[in-house]
Amino acid sequence: MNYNEIEFTLNGKKVGPTKVPEGTMMIAFLHEYLNLTGTKFGCGAGICHACVILEKTMTGHNTHRTCITGVAAFNGMELTTIEGHARIDVKTQEMTLHPVQQAFIENFSFQCGWCTSGFVNEAVGYYEELKKTPIAKEQLRESIEASLGEHVCRCTGYVKYYEAMETLILSQPELIK
Image (cartoon, rainbow, N blue to C red; front, side):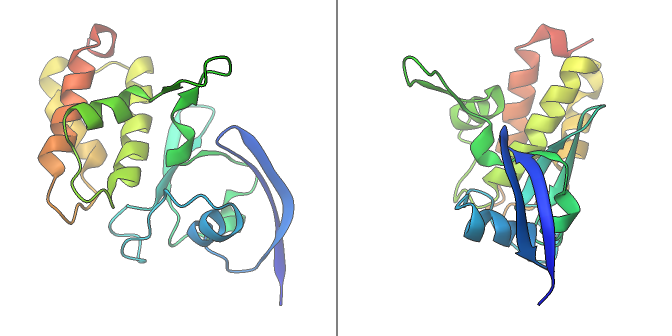
C-alpha cells in the first residue's frame, strides 16, 4: 500500500506530519483519524456540499468538498471544519458561537441538520468576505443565493438559511455599502 505524508492546520491546531493511505478522502480522515464527525457525508459525488470545509487563503476563503477530495490535496493548508467556528473562553469555559451559527439557530434554519455543516462553512466564508468587501443592499439577496446556492438541503430549508444570512448581514451596517 502507498502512503501520503500530510501536514496542515485544522481548527487552529497542527495536524501531522502523518502518513495516510493514498486515496483516503478528507471526510474519511476527519471522521476516522481525527474523530471530527460534524462534517457530513451526503451524496459522495460532490453535488450536495454537505461535506464542505473552509480553507483560509492569503486573500480570503475557499470551500472544498471533502467527499471527493483526497486528504493529500489539503497538505499545507489552513482549514476549518464545523467544529472550529465556536470559541470557548479559557477562564469561564463559556462557548460563543460564530455569528453565522447564532443566526442559523435564532432563525430555525435547519430541520434534520444534515446539510448544516456545509451551509455554515460556506456562510462563514461569505460573511468573512463581506467584512473586507461590503455589498450593496440591493444586491444582497442575489449574492446570498449565489453563495449558498450549490448546497442541497434534503428538507428544503433553503429559505430559512437565506433569511438568517440576510438578517445577520443587515444587522451589521459595516457589511453593507
